[in-house]
Image 1 (cartoon, rainbow, N blue to C red):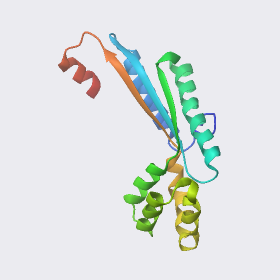
Image 2: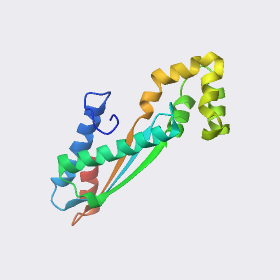
Image 3: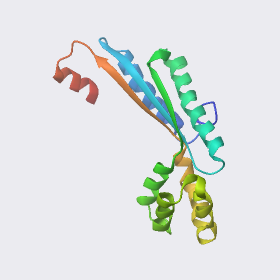
Length: 168
């Protein structure tokens, strides 16, 4: 996803869209199963201005919603669209499980310096900016994401049949 349009050739967008589409097609193609709610939450990476990143996360969420409505004829009324803005939690999780240099200092900055109190600047200044440049190139692109959760109703299935639908 980029700005306000979906670019299938970017990163792993195509495989993710195919995975989402396959699941939606299975739900829509199975008698007695219907989509109840679709929750979408978009995020941006933290570099740049906070307001711009918030707008990007809003656009990412809306783009996926529009794509799903158009491609799969899903009713607008089932969507709940949110936006998470800068994905600091995602950055923290990636750093925590990585071997990046200064990982504990990075986590400390994320945990203890407010977004509007110089968090990004402090990260930029850590060790002459080397960790920030590494994150910019290797980690930040992973933070530009949209999460989706689809809830569906299964009518007239006993629990064994429902388990078979969910796990197949």
